[in-house]
Image 1 (cartoon, rainbow, N blue to C red):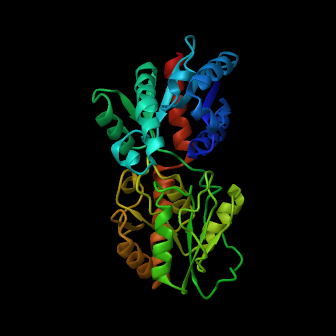
Image 2: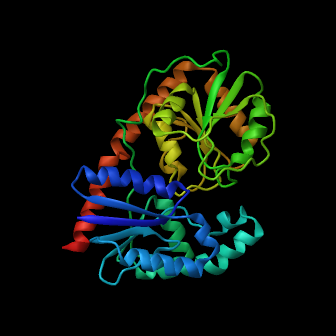
Image 3: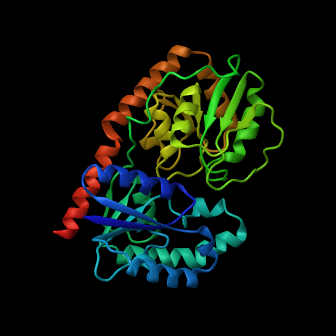
Length: 339
């Protein structure tokens, strides 16, 4: 069996399909990623021509893509699976976008998503929140199966790492794009409140933007990391911090949980499906710098609390969110469409 996955590159979707492809390969399924530059989004009519020309030339048994441009990747002779991640057209997400991009999403993306939902042979959501969001936005009777994201728990795991040069500081880690959706703009006020006893180490993300980061001494950008480097940086941290305003799932949170780290995040969208508040970390109100600072300080005061919460998170991943579980469920889905 061969599956092709056409998508717009430069986001977590690329990571999702790449990792799923690895899991499927262990089950004898070949998966080919077909990335399109984000620049094509500025020329949607050209993208339609490019997408149709590219996909028609691919040899495959099935097409698996995402909702935003899924209708462009449809092949008449092959089943189409569409996975719903965070919604790019719901009210909360649109409110965080600059006006021109908001108009683009409302006028062009929304009809494209609706069309894709109607075309798909099977709809999958990465979380119950993603499913309910799309039900509310479109048709409540849409048949949507939930398959949570999974992670390679043999790769993302607790490991001993060399001491950081900031041993006298509590190390916090953030991973993700520098966007308002990810709450990147909240990092500066939180770190200023925490002061010199804390240091935040953060990745460059796939779509980088400063969003107000200027000469904050207890914040250090690590650049773009490989998965091996990411593993090391997560394990160097005492606390992982993800102040997102919207998550279809939260793969960065899952990576931290698999590494046995406590997580401070927000009580919104799909995040409560991952983090058990009070047992695996703390869920704060969206945009509440005060609650985030308090949660981080509380964890910083107790090594034992951090260890206990991290161990809890590791077990949650092993029971519910492994790459093997995710891949086997997709294989069953593919087989049902091809039988």
